[in-house]
Length: 444
Image (cartoon, rainbow, N blue to C red; front, side, top):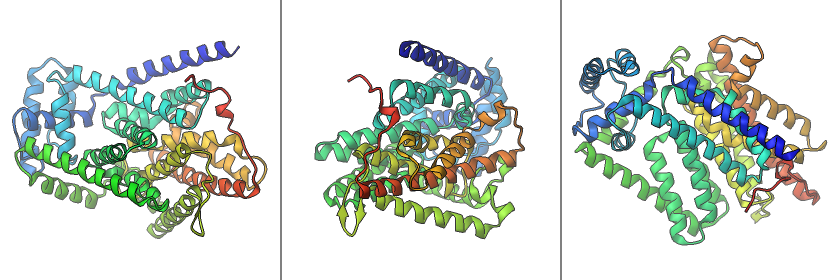
């Protein structure tokens, strides 16, 4: 019976992979096009002027002319749409794409989408193993994400880097857990630094990781990890500056990013940040209060997860892996909820939190307000999936869809912080609670 269940789930995952790739292949990959073209200009043609208005116009015209000479319909359609580039990514990101991409746009885009899917699958499986999921539960969660998770579909359509960021966060978790030497902890920090220089919207993930170490008062490890972050950032800055033949390119990027943050793109352009989605309905002050409440709840949750009460480390969570996944989940939600700019594909970073609350379901009995934990988890899973309600016949306006997504992210943050409180209360009572997803262990 178990074998038949696994076989059915494998079929669903395979269908989900095929469906996700096929649906994305109809889109031109508008974000990937800019990464691919600007990266090639930096690496192959040594172009350094990529952030000025003149440079953006030049890049748009240069690659539009190239697209008109090629037979690729996808490249032509996206080039016509992007006549003037919107270069706001870091020089390190453009350098990486320039080094790794081929000159054939269709081939490069197809390969990149395969990489994104591979990163996403590896991330879900990696988090599942850290949380001691059974194989069947892992496959079921993966099938749900592949079939109904709209942030993943968005990342595949536009060709952004959300799945790569998610995979990097999971890789960091494994590096940190497996690090038994000074060099291992430094390498974990280097990965965080590279991730930060690649796309700085993950700064809250980096902060969560470092704050977690600081709260544990492990000062030597904190110093080594912070040194690793600095080394990673400096390496990325130097490599990309050499590729662009200018160290001032990072100052130009900072100016471009600052101007974008001030522009505060509207919801109609795809900005799903709480300030844009909720402020028109509830007022800017209400959004600020909501964010401050979330920050306070997160801080209290960090204290409880790390067992910090009156200076004693009680280590209430069952394992270091669970503590680390919790910290990274909260940091990832900060990437979604705090900035004034949050595209739909940013919500891919909600995956660690969704898997964490799913792993806690059996540990919520009838005590400690667990009924609200079940409700919050259901809201988070259904709301953040995006496509699940649509598949049930529910139709929403863009604003309604965005509001559901943002409020579901807040619900997930509340459930994560409440789960920290439950761990604290359980440790006081000395009770041991199991995890149903761990019933069938992964093979060694």
